[in-house]
Amino acid sequence: MVETRGLSKRYGNTVLAVDQLDLNVHRGEVYGFLGPNGAGKTTTLRMLLGLIRPTAGSATVAGHAPGDPAGLARIGAIIETPAFYPYLSGWDNLKVVADYAGVPDSRLGDALEQVELTPRAKTKFSTYSMGMKQRLGVAAALIKEPELLILDEPTNGLDPQGMIDMRKLIVELGKGDRTVLVSSHLLGEVEQMCTRIGVIQDGKLVAEGTIGELRGAATLTVRAAPVSQAQMILTRMLGADAVIQRDGAFRLRVDAGRAAEVNRELVTAGVEVSELVSGQRSLEDVFIELTGSEGGL
Amino acid sequence: MNVAGVLKGEFLKLRKRPAVWVCIGILLLLLLAFGYLLSWIVFTYTKPPTGPNGLPPGVTYAELKKGLYPLHFIQNTLNGGTQLGGVLALIIGVLSQGSEYGWGTVKTAFTQRPRRLEWLAGKLVSVALTMLVMTLLLLAMAALTSFVLATIDGGDRTWPAAVVILKGILSAWLIYCFWGFFGFGLATLFRQSAMAIGLGLAYALVIEALIFGLLSQFVGDPVRKVQQWFPLANAQYLIQSFGPPTREVGANPRPPFADATHAVTMLLLYCAAFVILSAAFLQRRDVTS
Image 1 (tube, each protein chain N blue to C red):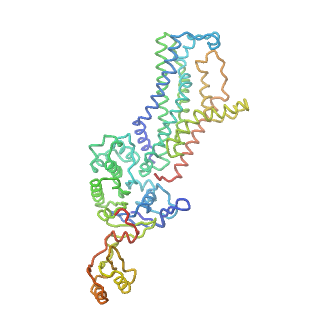
Image 2 (cartoon, rainbow over the protein chains, first blue to last red):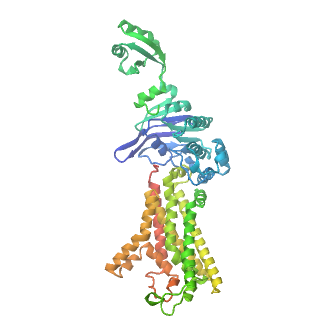
Image 3 (cartoon, rainbow over the protein chains, first blue to last red):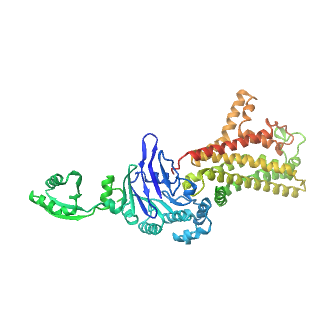
């Protein structure tokens, strides 16, 4: 549904906002576009919608070049905060969007109903709360009955209940054949909503896959003392790349079947092992490893 | 193509925007007050000044009053309503485009279906039609007021020839369109309203008048040859082609330097230039806000 090849955007000679991005979003999935603030998520989404022209590379969105009217007719989008006319009511704002999109007015009621905004449809947009503005944005994105929804940080600025409601709504919208591409810097949110994830850092796509694929095979977690001696033994045994020390524990990228062997080596060398657990890495660990950032956790 | 859809959306926005009606209301009110009522009160209830500040020989208030009657309503409206109306048309043009950048709604529009140039076409047509509405309201109010005043005075209620009325409507519309498109172009260039209104007003009220005022002091009459290529001068030529202001009865006003055909051609060229510049900026630039 969305495919980019070597997509890049450079501002001037210094800022490379997006660097050789190869993104693949499949039909029917809820794809999480995850990255810390300033990683290049919004720039990428703007390029996919034809708002920004790439410096290099290409993209196909809903079967068309970005910004092509035939493609846009199949896409609903919210980029950053939803932008509407403050002096118009929610209904009139949707009417303007529907006129632009060539959609019949009969769709407006359904779209407002879907985001539970019908009771406030006739009041001015300027009087809406942040949550209502965001829901009107979703309604505007839905009036075309799009095959692809592109939502840029849709829970930004919402209160906790608003965030929960918005996530539920996105999951609901992603059911069936519809594809949802949702960007976020919030790991928990992406983990709750998405079937597949792409992680962007400094404009580059550093990982892409299902949550299971990204978390990888089961690993071992070891707590042992003295720490320095344990680290030396584990590094010698498994290699430096396989040993990650964090919060006083070692996370080992080895098959859980080697737990007994690891325990024996440490104990034989006089190291006290207080904990030895097998399990998968959390998405948080994966994100920190990939981006070196704890942003938005 | 979805220009019709854009046009529908733009009409809804302009129709429901209070600022547009405030601008048109101010224009109607000022023309009514200063173009008709105050003059009528002065001509009816006061005596003309005497001495060096007095009226030219043979001119009376009764004769000046005839300028307020229906026969002269086109002339009156063009003389009294186009400069202030131009400024308000500029503001409407600026708001139509500048606010889109301020509210971030350019991205909302461009993520729907219309191509950028279709969106621009729809917006410019809606601005032009708003200018037509403004022109018609203004002239209708002037016609009605002049008729009422003539009736109160028992004066001449003859209307100008239909062709003069039609030319008047088209002339006022063209002048307002020039200002509206000028404002629209400035807002597209600066991607905001404040700078566009500031510069537009500076041009309308100061720049052209200042440049040619200063130059004429040093260079003299040849300045008029240069001035004939500038928009405000051409708007003035067009207005003057309907005859001198009715309050200048008895005076000997300078004839316009260029004729109405020249003025119309120049104003149309300026309108076209603003459309092309707006299209170029809109088409080439990224939408980053």
